[in-house]
Image (spheres, rainbow, N blue to C red):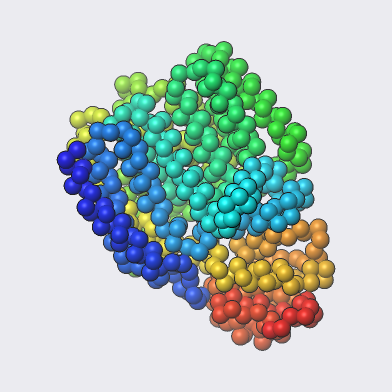
Amino acid sequence: MERSKLALLPFFVGLALLSYSWYTSYPLSIEFPGDFVFNHISIFYWLSLPLVLGSLYVLGVFSKSRSLKCAVSVAIIVAIYSLSFFYYSMPTADSQLFRPLTEYFIKTGNLGTFQLNHFYFQWPSYFFLADIVTSVSGLELIYFEFLFYAIIGVLLTATLYVYASRLFKDGALLGVISFFISMYYFLNFQSCPFSFALALTFVLFMLETRKKSAPLIVSMLAIFFCVSFTHYFVALFFILYLIFRSLINRSKQYATLSFLTLTVYLVTQTTLASWNWIELTVRGFLTWSPEYGSIAQTTLNTPVSMPIDVIAQTVSRTLTIAVVLVCIIGCAFMLKRRKLRAIDWAIFLSSFAWFAIGAVLYSLGSRAIPMFFIPVSLGAACLFETRFRSYLKGLFLVLLILFVFVPIHNSYYSFSNSFVPFQTKEASNAEHFLMDHYDWTNPSLILAHSPVRVYLLSSLDTKQTEATFEDEFSPLFPRLKEYDCILYTVGLGNSFSRYNYTIEVIAYEGKLNVVYNNGFSEIATKGSHFASVTP
């Protein structure tokens, strides 16, 4: 314990530097085409993150208190994802899908549009919760997203720690760290329905490690009802898990639980959710391609933009591979010593089955990877309780210090593909100006950056608009004369820059008039698509 106290001073120093870096960097953005987020992050962030992670790890690994180890696990994962809180709005990949959906529901109270861009309204738990919290607390939606993001992270971390500590009391901390480092690019961790349902499923796995009782089973069924009313893929995974658990244990109790959860699932999907989700799912089954190819291409062929990004990518890949190898070696030890529990085997088998389904149904494959890695991460915890303990202490300290290269690479990666995965305040103002003042009854073609296009489609009732939206992936791009309106943001500017187009060239060649300009985002249009608007 005395050694762990030595980590308190560097922790508080690192925390102070981290706070100062947030103060000087917030809100992170990009200011012009070709710019990178890395250019706007304070150097104190890169100095403080290794200090915070290293000191927290030392504090946890030498502590004898399980509650302190659990708290340290949570703090480490919050630090790992800390850069997300440096943005004006949630910077995750699907944030510009679920934010407008939530805004639309809060504004209209309407869940019954049943159009493709409002597909998630079939499972409204997330949207109900956002509406209730923002209405009662007066919290703005963008701040609710950050709060809920943090709550989901705490749930995922704390439940995973309890899951691992039931088997490895001392090594559970390493199991949690291994899971989140290995799954950094595969875990769908956002403020969104899937992540909410995933966190609740982790709670169910945590409860599964306890001895069954009537109150516990009732609690699990209640939580499962929330999962099935939040995301249908995740609920199906847990049903699949219970089926395998009943086969492994040859248990009538688990067979009954499988039947009960399946009944709850079918009732919620056929009554509370609309039937047309089945039609949309079947349509996706017949038309969408499995994503395994894109996962492999993204993992192995990630483009690099700057010399420092080359170093960062190399270190981050080496770090991830090292953690995965430790987990695999530890799993081999577990198999040899027959330490894998029935719950671990059931999650393994459920994940393999989910992989098989993902071979023919889009988006299921990547969602199974974190599930599969839940028991795999126990390998690191197992090795920590062997004669390799002292080596692992040093190894993971070095790995956590080097983790800083992961967010460095991430601050370059998305933008090398001209993709801006976050919404700036200026872009939000431009998007809302367009929605408030555009004549949606007039047939027209609108060009916007792909995440902005998603935001606009999700914000509107497409049954009441005659406008058509295109993005930079359209076959028409960049033929300027085809568009009636262009919502220019830095993300779209990145795509235009490949053709040496500036906003001035775009307006001139497209014969467009600029009706809105806030210095970062502009709206250019032709004809009378805006009524009574002063440029």
